[in-house]
View 1 (cartoon, rainbow, N blue to C red):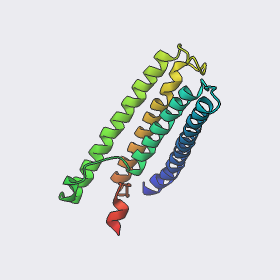
View 2 (cartoon, rainbow, N blue to C red):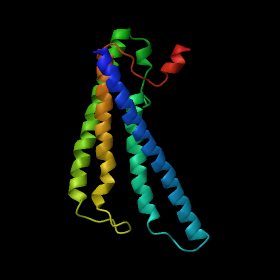
View 3 (cartoon, helix red, strand yellow):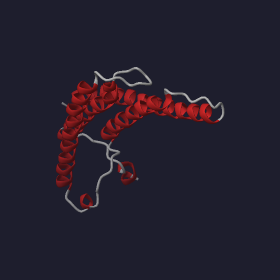
View 4 (cartoon, one colour):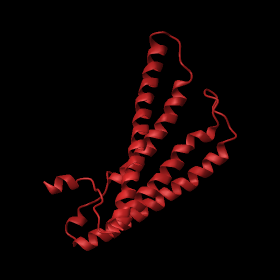
Length: 173
């Protein structure tokens, strides 16, 4: 089972890396679009009408894809004070409960993001001409990735394999 999980983890790592690259590119593009807007408006006195809506769309991509990768890598906020005094088995159980709750939240993001996408698809963004539903695709995709990465964490823990937690590298030193 561990060999299967290791090969699955390799492919999920590639998926996480691709999501992180897409999130990073979105952040860089958003920053460039806002800088172009400021320059065009205040230096050239010619506002660019498409930059604000584009930046908002890109922000959704980097937030939700980044959150999904953060789930996989264990970089989300948590209260670990109680975990420091509990026995190891109880800590593993609480981490698993946390991953189940996060997976349920991701499933909700997927379900309701899909519903928002569907219900708003007929509208149109005035400055870009895209359907309004495009705004909610990152929520839906981020929810799917959060579910996948949370399930991976649960499977790794059940197989006795290490799952990343923020601060683990500090505890090992």
